[in-house]
Image (cartoon, rainbow, N blue to C red):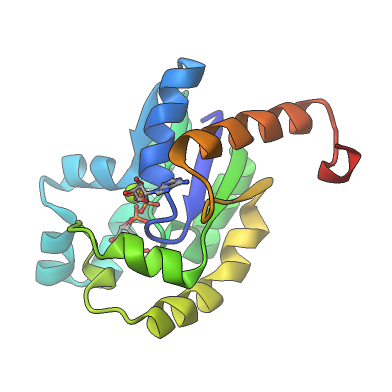
Length: 176
Ligand SMILES: Nc1ncnc2c1ncn2[C@@H]1O[C@H](COP(=O)(O)OP(=O)(O)O)[C@@H](O)[C@H]1O
Ligand SMILES: O=C(O)C1=C[C@@H](OP(=O)(O)O)[C@@H](O)[C@H](O)C1
Ligand SMILES: [Mg+2]
């Protein structure tokens, strides 16, 4: 992959990967879609019938099988939790983009109907707690971090393009 998007549920990985792929003319892969295609099961069905550890094994295997393809990869919110996945993400040579948003924003985005078994019935506090548990794993991988909370989808894309340019030219955010 050239670019890998990581971050909490509803931070925008799936949405942004699609638009970024169009903008940069790169193929787009979504790890959840790849897992569903490989297992021929929907994500909630995998959690219900086989449990989370089985899902995490599938996720790790699917990551290993897709990470060497060209393009942009949208991971799932839990993908960087396993150390082996973090190592694979770092070793891929892709630019790693961490999308963030405050718990209240994430909570509102999660109220839309979705395919996320772990988001069902989460309070704002539970979202904040889970974010706190996961943040070190995300930050360990990230080359670029973008807070999408106050941005539109279009603004997020523009910010990513700018930050990728800065990274390429060795500029730090403080230089701007
Ligand atoms: N600035 C933004 N960047 C990304 N997504 C945003 C933004 N503002 C609102 N959203 C919305 O947040 C939701 C993110 O969902 P999704 O792309 O499925 O996230 P993920 O794949 O990280 O779980 C979408 O409904 C998207 O339209
Ligand atoms: O955060 C998580 O543990 C998960 C996030 C989901 O992906 P999104 O982050 O794209 O919603 C999906 O992989 C699964 O429901 C588990
Ligand atoms: Mg997604």
